[in-house]
Structure formats: C-alpha cells, structure tokens
Image 1 (cartoon, rainbow, N blue to C red):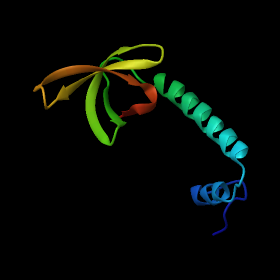
Image 2 (cartoon, one colour):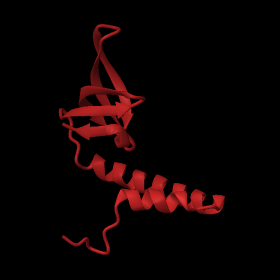
Image 3 (spheres, rainbow, N blue to C red):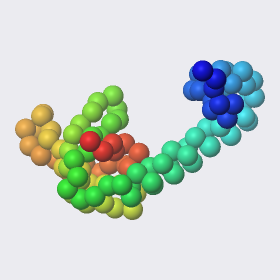
Image 4 (cartoon, rainbow, N blue to C red):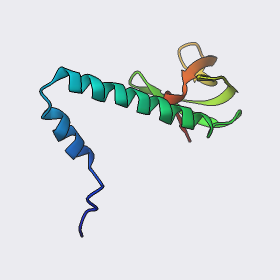
Length: 100
C-alpha cells in the first residue's frame, strides 16, 4: 500500500519541528497553529445548537453538559458539579466543546 505524497503524518510534522533551530520559525508555526485552532473553533460553533448534549475538555478533566446559550465566542453550558451537588453554568470556548 503506497502513501499519497500529499499526505503527511503527525510524526513527520513533529520530526520537522524538532529539526528547526530558529526561534523565529517556531514562533511562526505557533502563530499558524493558534489561527488554525481559532478557525476550527469558529467552524465548531456552527455545528452546535441549544439543548445539545456536549462534552467539555480542558484542564485535564472531562465534563458533560447541555448547551443553554450560544454567544459569539463561547457557549453557556449547564453541567453537574459534584462538589456543589448542583447544576452549574459554565462559559466555555468553542475549542473546548465536543459534540456527543
């Protein structure tokens, strides 16, 4: 089975980054990744709807909740907080929301 020459694996990308010796190049890559993440998060916004069950990822933990409101850059998600033993609304960036 041959690989399409246009396809690049994550391993190849990581190896290419490891071979960089210039901080300016790393800054450029970092800026590109930030912009790409923002674009994907913006596209994620259009796939969300009020009342939808979602998973929130971040800070090493995963929470489940339901979207209450969708704002320009964040969604308000109603989640169960086991420490308070109550439902809590969190303002969550679209980049941290995954659809169940």
